[in-house]
Amino acid sequence: MRKRLNLFSKKNQKEAMPLLSAKNRLYATIAGVVLFVVFLIINFFQFSLQKQVTSLEQKKNETYTYLLSVKDLEAKAQILTQKETQLQTYLKDNVEFIPYYKVLTETQLVSSNSANLGAISISKDKSVEFSYDISPGVSLIEVINVIESSAFLDKFEYLKMSSFSLGNAELAKGYKLVFKGKFKPIL
Amino acid sequence: MISSYQIRKYGGFSRENASTLTAFAVIPILMFLLMISIKNYTALQEQYNNTQTELTQMDSKVKALNSVKNVPPQELDDLNQLLTQLMPETEDLFSVIYAIETLSNKTGFIISSYTINLDKSKGGKLSIAVDGVGNEQTFLQFIQSYRYEGGRLITIEKIDMPSRGGGNLKLDLNFYAKQTPLAQTQTTTEFLQGKDLELLRSIKDKVKIVIKDDSNTSVDYPTKDNPFE
Image (cartoon, rainbow over all chains, first blue to last red; front, side):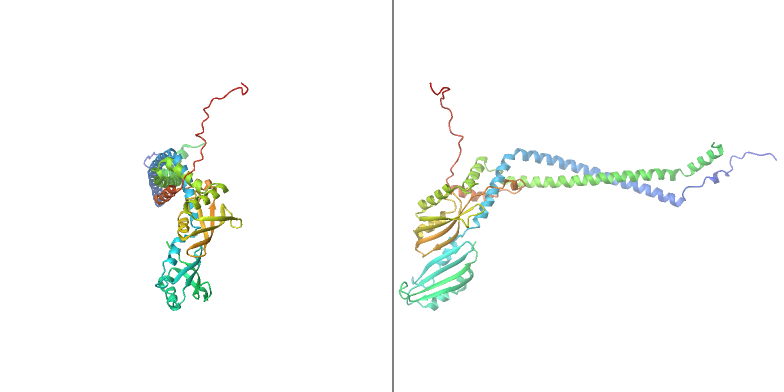
């Protein structure tokens, strides 16, 4: 029998088996496309960020140049600021006498001049000791009412009578009240 | 040797799997490029954050400097000089005595004695116990002037007033002398505000600044090369 050559035969093509199934090839293609898209997106953001960085760097250089031009001013201002801060710190270490003194002098214990402010001792932490010399004949109740009034007591964190003396020669038979306490800060 | 059959066989295989093979080649390349891109992006993001932080610091410094930008440089020098006089870097007992005497003369409050309290004098603070005599008016005048008008910063820690009329008063005064810690100021982004400047200006009005400057001393006088001529 005579052999014939048939070029349309698919005999050899059947031997070339596909490496992946059609489904897996689809997955590979999708993965490739997704990776490529992600790659493009990241590069887009990178490009955009690069532009922002360049702009910031330019701004930074301009600011740096300006700061260099006012270097002397900055140095002087820094030293002055530091010294002023020190000054403010030291000023807190102060008794601030006058406003507290006024509280004691402006309080009318009795209507006449029969009650006088005596000794005063005041510290920077606002602790205070003061005395009133009261002339004879003045009602003690009247004096105590003023001392215990909220208008007076509100100026103090606490206030207590530390001593009471009556009828000595110095006071010409009057009496002396000594108080100890602590002022509330007056701003 | 590869036979023509094998060539046909493998050629057919390649044609059949061209897309698969391409994917095998392209996917790792894409993944590699993607990793490089992510790495670059992260580095760029870090650079952005760092630059942003630096710029924010610089901007706050510029903003803070605006409060003193309009102050003439000479005034800044004067205020520095003023504060150096009020709080010198090293203690100077002559200026302490001078300040006490100045205040006494200015206010009429007579300071009869003063004693340095060594126990309380530490950390740049000099504590002096002062006895003074005066009436209520001179004492209150002293109390209104003591802080700056003697030419040194003075604070009072304690006042003992024997009676409202004055009498023999006892005061615990503090003087201050301390070196300004410059190292801390290098990172400062806050400068004097308007109210601070106002305070310093008001102090300047009360204090006579003693300028210690030798630059005005004239050296322009005739000299001889030979002293025996």
